[in-house]
Amino acid sequence: DTGVSQNPRHKITKRGQNVTFRCDPISEHNRLYWYRQTLGQGPEFLTYFQNEAQLEKSRLLSDRFSAERPKGSFSTLEIQRTEQGDSAMYLCASSLAQTGDGYTFGSGTRLTVV
Amino acid sequence: AQSVAQPEDQVNVAEGNPLTVKCTYSVSGNPYLFWYVQYPNRGLQFLLKYITGDNLVKGSYGFEAEFNKSQTSFHLKKPSALVSDSALYFCAVRAQNSGYALNFGKGTSLLVTP
Figure 1 (cartoon, each protein chain N blue to C red):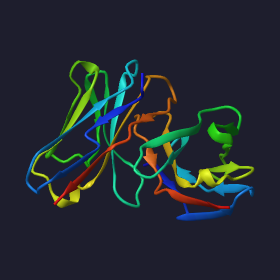
Figure 2 (cartoon, one colour):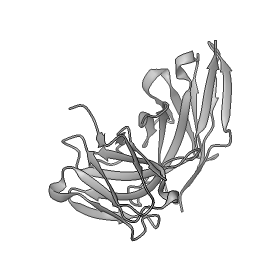
Figure 3 (spheres, each protein chain N blue to C red):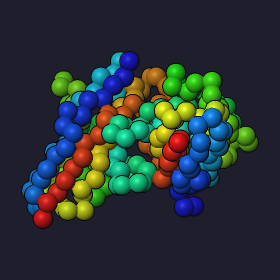
Figure 4 (cartoon, helix red, strand yellow):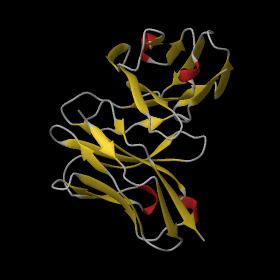
């Protein structure tokens, strides 16, 4: 297993368009997380899944954002009607369901909205 | 509410000297504490974590961190810095009894000069 994989690495889109990102976690990890990181800031939590169930969502996750994890494997994050403020690095992480587990992060998808 | 403060935006150290990157936290109850490192245009890499037990935690690449409950701190340390340690360092916290989202600090840029 090569770790957490995210695609695409970079995405440039026009304002108002929809975009979708994909995350493939480490295969035996049943927890999957999405974070957003803007320049000069630490990652901010968006949402997390345990298997296919979305168990927690941040208030940052507006109704333009939706995340899915069908079958409890890969996950997608969709942003509808993108805005310039959505420009950021979107990070995916996965972990095992153990007390105090650390995350393994992917390299991220950098979104630029023009 | 959970939060992390990294009071220094940048730390400069000469190669071979000891380094310290500071982190203080606020959390209800007992914390899980983490340090991650980020290289340019990359995701975050796990360095070490404090769950319970010994207050001195040893991690990857010769880094260690000391948990101090009375000062609510979790400073990252290394006895002898390398130029290759130059990167962005993030401290993160979550409460043991509250969700799985990590709260990250803003990050500290470490520059090790030859």
